[in-house]
Image 1 (cartoon, rainbow, N blue to C red):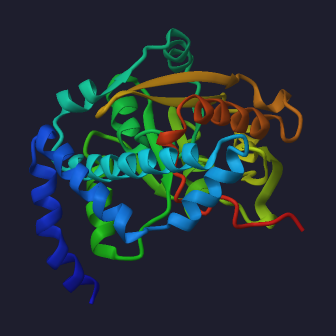
Image 2 (cartoon, rainbow, N blue to C red; image 1 turned 120 degrees about the vertical axis):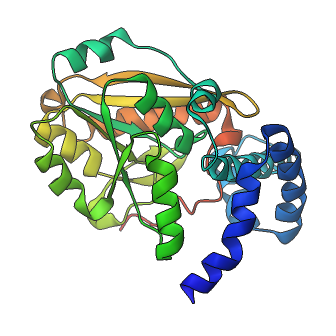
Length: 287
């Protein structure tokens, strides 16, 4: 059944990915109306927005929600476009802001741990980092249940040299790479179960944060780098690395997670539209 679904859907995905950018965004405008009418996760989106921005009126929340759905359609089609993107397009569409301190770390053979959120186009951030730095980027991810779509996504995410590792193999991969100079990237703003979480306040709400990034950073003493993905205009982003902690072993428990959460919140407040509001971020409750 998985194979049948894939081969029925894949030709349409391929045709979409082959569209020039102008036509891609016109199609995205059409998809927006379909998404909005379908009510896809509307309850989740509105609940997340209301609780995160209690000071905003109903009209402001509605405007934010509509803008978010427009962006979600853009993000979805931009991700598909990766299948047909050239190296020059990848560089042009997600501009890397050079950081001399990061180049120096690579020269000193220091591996790093990257933390980021579901903010901006995180799929384009990988190629941008890989193409513009000397680091071997290793992205930790959760595989799809459909093996055929999983193979398609793996091809898209690794086409410019990025490596990906299933989340269950994170520690094993990092141990195996200890003698190499790598940048291990984790998207660290997903809902965390109480067994593997640190609790903090994020967007006015009691929030569980995966403690894995902090534990890994301290264990290997890899400098922690926050990757900020800013949207310049429709279809264009810039990638800005920020050093959060150079020596994680010198930090207190929870300090790394607090700092990451704070930085992500700052960016969401600056441009709330491009965060993943349809994610069930607050589905876990503190015991």
